[in-house]
Amino acid sequence: MKRAIVFLFLINMLFSCDDFLSRSPLVSLSPDNFFNNEEECKLLVTSLYNPISYQDYTFLDEYTDDVYSAAQVGGSGQKFIQGDIQAFDSYSKNRWSKNYKAIGNANLAVNGISVSSISEGTRNRLVAEAKFFRAYYYYDLIALFGDVPLVLTDPSVSENLCPARDTREKVFQQVIEDLNYAIQYLPVSYTGNDIGRVTKGAALAFKARVLLFFSEYEEAAKAAEACMELGVYKLFPDFRGLFLEENEYNEEVIFDKGYLKDIMGSGRNTNIITQDMYLPTLSLANEFEMNTGKMVTEDGSNFDSQNPFKDRDSRLSSTILLPGAIKDGLLNSDGSPVVFIPANDLSVTGMRLKKSADYTDNTNNNSGTNFIIIRYADVLLMYAEALNEIEGPTSSVYNAINQVRQRAHQPVLTNGLTKEAMREKIRHERRVEFAGEGLRYFDIVRWKIADVVFSNNLEGYDKQNLKNPSNPAEWKFTSTNVLKTSWNASKGYLWPIPGEERLLNSNLTQNEGY
Image 1 (cartoon, rainbow, N blue to C red):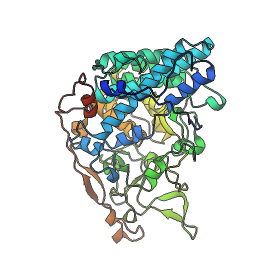
Image 2: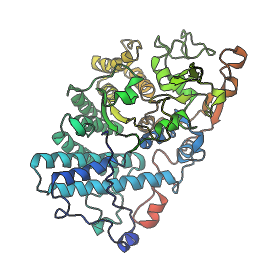
Image 3: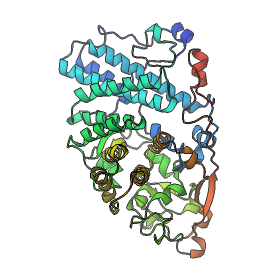
């Protein structure tokens, strides 16, 4: 939604028995004094979009082998990949609290609008939107924390103030139930100012994401295929342009977070073009194939370690600002293009994220570029992955993954791959296609590959050897360690239940290892 949503509907759903009861309600809502007309109901549902942020995804990249953020030294992401995340770390608490506040508002919307007197069609659609978001926020909780309290009543109901944890499976079933309702009643598309609201396609794609996370392959394939069969989505032809503001709401975008310059701007552009955050690692850069389809480490690849970006997958230069690359659209005072010189930059990996970067926008934390949450390429690769796990590498699996590869001008996959080989191809494709979009963390978790991923330290290019591309003596590609990693198997893949929440609610148990 390209709009300023100033209406912030804030209900503090902090799970504190005594503290909550000692405060007067911030606002009193009932069908009699709020759900009087469609506009008021729509305002409430619109507020459910507000808590979503690009940071919900990009911060999670710091929990992976794809990026390093020097600005977050000692932060929860670094603690996670070093096996040292703790129950009182702030990010766990913030994520938990934000999700439950949003769920409280979603419950208000679902329960209030369901009994309102507005027209049936509008009522069903708005309840469907609210249920989509309740599912969205609950999925985030169970993916990160495992068992969590399942609360479906309004936050003002006293019996919900100190709930115990419900099983992950029970919450998962509620998520699927809510998404099924959303799929039934949400429209395929919108017009005018409603463009950007969640659609049937968004609900189907998100359902596929949830099902795939929990290895429900048959149902995940069905949901992805149903989204494909809507016939409204296709791959945008320009991979770099896909993420730029001038191409928002293009045919590949299924669901995104809207931002509006000067009113509700995003800080993402500032983060990636000027700050020492989300800096690509050498592991990520080396994951991109040669344009022949061979990996850089593969025999016969012709990879040149001192000319490492020659003849590579085109997505590499669209995703990462590489040493010696031009910053698109940015000019020096003499009119010449600005070239990225790592030795003169804050980046400790010698690279920067380029995906969605607008180098001509020098405003601080004020970008109007939307952040894509689900796009059609994800649906294709989810479908390919789920179907491969069920049936092996059928022609439909090849067709789905090859569509994504061909958009990047990469050769199609060779016929005759085994199920295991295709699995690795799909995992590779997801990493390079969605780099910088915050999906890698969830993939690492659901594939249970952290012990392998974090067996190697994070590396980058030694930027002190990248000073002058016109002088070979001052332009050498050598690697350097930027962060030591260590996987802590005793804590596993679940985050700790926030310590502050357990102090307020004695019914909350802790995850193993914390």
